[in-house]
Image (cartoon, rainbow, N blue to C red; front, side, top):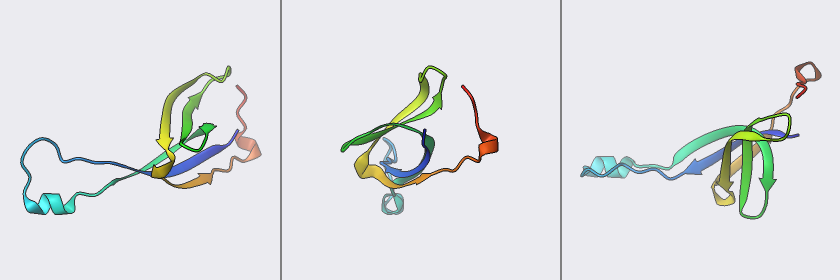
Length: 85
């Protein structure tokens, strides 16, 4: 089981009202971080499970398009942190 920290980008929007030029010029992409267990990893996407149960069931899943992923780092868990489920 690999626990990873994934840095990724997301789209952002200002909303439906009119915006001044300064607001438009300052619009940027969202920079995000997610931590979880890699459940799927193929050419198009990586699926992270942020909570996993004893029967490999899960909650708080996220599918990240590969083009949005900027970095993946495996987190180290020390032997004293071992969790039995």
